[in-house]
Image (cartoon, rainbow, N blue to C red; front, top):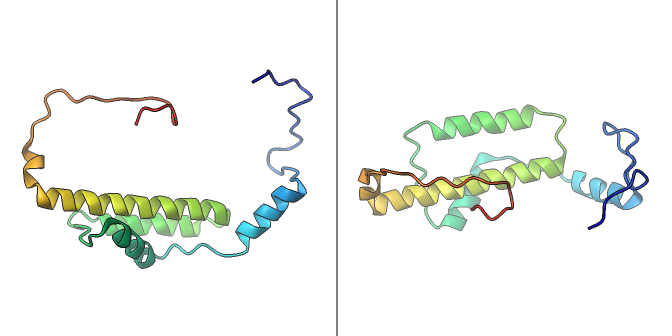
Length: 130
């Protein structure tokens, strides 16, 4: 990859970018249909993916998730593409919680294992640290 020159990077206004025709078409396409953030629908997707149904809401998880979804709904500036990304993230997190709940039901002894020296890996996103 070569270095970019000043001529390669020209930003007139970051708050109101000038879109190409293709970018405008993609934006219009993604904005044409509202992304619904219905908790029941997302939970149904997550349970279908995880193959289990117990969310174990003994810690108020559903109430906090509902507040999170309400905050997303209240943000009128979000594009549908962003809403779609957030929706996918919620479904993934629900699926992970369902899977973890099932794991702990099958192997409750996991919670009694003492971790003496945790092994923590940190790194930049997409750098292979996961």
